[in-house]
Each structure stands twice: as C-alpha cells, then as structure tokens.
Amino acid sequence: MSLVNKVVLITGAGRPNGIGAGIARCFANEGAKVLITDLEGAPLDATARAISDRVTGLVADAADQHSMARAAEHLLSLHGRIDVLVNNAGLGGLVLDFEEAGKTESVLAMTDAAWDAHLVSNLRTTFSSSAAVSPHIAQHGSIVNIASIAGLGPTPQLPAYGAAKAGVIHFTQTLAIELAPRRIRVNCICPGLLWTRAWEMLASRMKTRRPAFANMTERQIFEAIVAERTPLGGEQTPEDIGHLAVFYASEKARMITGQVIAVDGGRSVA
Ligand SMILES: NC(=O)c1ccc[n+]([C@@H]2O[C@H](COP(=O)([O-])OP(=O)(O)OC[C@H]3O[C@@H](n4cnc5c(N)ncnc54)[C@H](O)[C@@H]3O)[C@@H](O)[C@H]2O)c1
Image 1 (tube, helix red, strand yellow):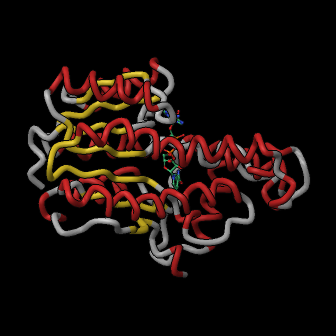
Image 2: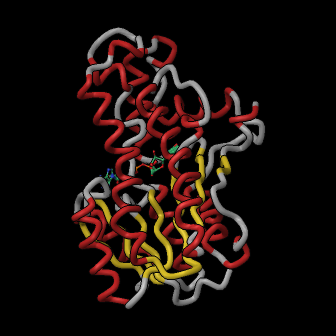
C-alpha cells in the first residue's frame, strides 16, 4: 500500500488486544511510523514495544484539543510530518447506557451526565482530535474515523453510544467536504463485533442482567451474539479493521472521501 515512512497517529490504542493496536500493527507492517495514544501510560508503552520499534506511545486525552495539540507537536518533533490520523478512542460497551443511568430500560431514563459521558468518549474525541491534528496533516494525507454498526441504526441497549457513533459518521462526511481543498480525505469504518475489553465488559454486564446468559461465560455470551446474526459466520479481528484503515490511507484510495464501510461480516444488512 506504499505507506513506507508515512507518519500515523492513532488514538485510544493502548490495549494490546484492542482495535487501535490492531490498526497500529497493520500500519507498521506497511512501513509507517506510528504514534499510539491513550489515557494511561503503562499498557500503552508495552503495547507499542510489542508491535514494532516504529511504534511509540504517548499519554493524551483524545477529547481535549490541548492534549492532542501536544501529541501532534510531539509527533512532528519525532518525524517532522503527520500523514494520517486514526480516531479510534471510544468507550463502547464499558457500560450498558441504562445501567449507568441506574434506571429502567428506557432511552428517556438516562441522566444528562450519563448521556454526556458517552458523547464525550465517542464523539467529542473524534472532533477534538481532528481539530487539533488536522492543521498539521500533510497534503494527500487522511483521517480515518472508527464509528460502529451501532451508528447505522437504532440501538435499544446502547442509545447514547449509538447516537454518538451516528454523529461520528455524520462528522466524517462534513469534515470530508471541509478538508477536500487541502486534498485530505476523511473516511469512516463501522466495526461489527470484536472480542476486546469493551466486549468483555459488556458481556459481563449482560450476564448479570439477562437470565438466559446467567450460566454462560462472558466469551460464550459474545459467541452466542455473534452467531445470532452474522451472515459470514464469525467475529471480526482488529486486523480486519486495520486492513481497511491502511487502504483508506493509501494512494489506492486517492478518490475516496466521506465514505462509510461496515466491517461486520454482513451483520448490518442481515
Ligand atoms: N469491540 C467492538 O466490538 C467494537 C465494535 C464497534 C466499534 N468499536 C469501536 O472501536 C474503538 C476501539 O474499541 P475497542 O473495542 O478496541 O475497545 P478498547 O476499550 O479496548 O479500546 C478503546 C480505548 O480507547 C481509550 N479511550 C477512551 N477514551 C479516550 C480518550 N478520551 N482519550 C484517549 N483514549 C481514550 C480507552 O482507554 C481504550 O484503551 C472504539 O471507538 C469502539 O467504540 C468497537
């Protein structure tokens, strides 16, 4: 994909089994230099070291423009340029939205604070990081936003998360138009179901809330949900997401901007 010496910043990539780390592995395999960021330092540095010596880590809050401006300056001081921003940070599945609200299962039972927390983690992260980093992105560079299939339609269990991810899709399209004169492309990926910490936490909550899941392990719950409705018959891997991110960022996608592709084994059309 000709990404040798391209410089890439990926947010929320601190966990070794997370989507961000998988995206970082795919870019590093194509010869890119990568900075991964997350809220905490310990797993982040270990994750970076485990991928490649072309990957480094930096603590930064993706929902804070000042913090991300410092991350951009750090990356410029290391490599002198930035070609790609991947907005991957998010807190999907850490809580069922209703449970955080502590009330009944109604969209309208959520508190303002619970609603805002989801919007900050999953939508403002994409806005703030783009606002801080995009002025430094080189011509013919690109931004890749990680939304979710939850952003493509109603999400009764996760209304605030779904609304935030729908916002990411909409923002992708708006930003694509705004940055087109600078020849910076902006595209979006909607992952389906991946066994990362987000799903480990979500399955653990489901286990206590749904009698049908009570005697299953978290992994079995996840597998049952994947089997329920995935035409291609399996979960996705972080590399499945990373391969599309690499393609979007490459010269081969030079005429693709403002687009949204689900990597979900067909779940969103089933
Ligand atoms: N796992 C799935 O099935 C799935 C499906 C669809 C979409 N996604 C999306 O993929 C992305 C990655 O999720 P994952 O499954 O790898 O989960 P994960 O929890 O392993 O990774 C998300 C990371 O984002 C970080 N983060 C959250 N807020 C941040 C902030 N303000 N600044 C910096 N880092 C922040 C977290 O610390 C965490 O390390 C998320 O945007 C998530 O919503 C995941």
